[in-house]
Length: 254
Ligand code: NAD
Ligand code: ZN
Figure (cartoon, helix red, strand yellow):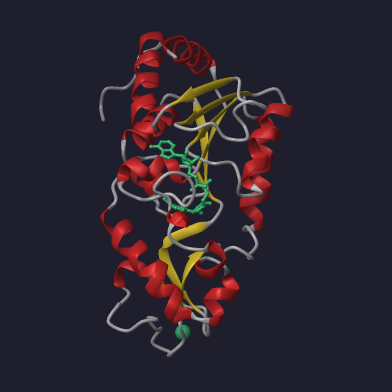
């Protein structure tokens, strides 16, 4: 493993158009449970019952009570961890161009990354099912479930539920950046949710080096990962940053 980290640092120190693809795993150590994997929400509930758009439209009260209310409580408190901050450092160094994330927690922006493509939207906003008005999630009153817009319409998170389309712009830009990157860092994603999971394949087909950080093997690990770094984001990312730092000066003003 130390050798894999050194080799990853060699490659990243020379990279100029790296892209990161992140999933729920990078935010686990910020206190946000993932869906799949150990301790994941899907051990407790059926995704199609709680995170499918049809389930929400059929029973908004039930989905708010089972999933969204708790998400709001957890996400309100969450702060970026060292996995997020190392990605912000890599952007400042001119190594990393863009973060493509499946997360809806806004932690990459909070850590300081300026170009973040949100595949599944952002939980920071709610949208009215009737008049389409947007309201900040932090300002939503949970006294009434489901919470309502001032027009009386039901509020929904501005996230992509199962059964909904990925925002077109996000998809097209991600495909282009994946095809053009020299390195793809795949961090904390089970690589099971499409179409995000195709991005590493696009990158690999176009000659990028795939560096994967995950405590468990994924469908990518044996198929396309050049450098699988087995471990948690907060353990691997600072070690990777330290190894890169030995190869080039890092700004010390953070
Ligand atoms: P996932 O839940 O399918 O998989 C999480 C992955 O993270 C697993 O492979 C697991 O092994 C790995 N992991 C667990 N702990 C880790 C750690 N400390 N460091 C690094 N990796 C770790 O995640 P997914 O593939 O992103 O798909 C689930 C979907 O659910 C996402 O598309 C997202 O929209 C949504 N989601 C978002 C959040 C969030 O915003 N933080 C949280 C849960 C789910
Ligand atoms: Zn409304």
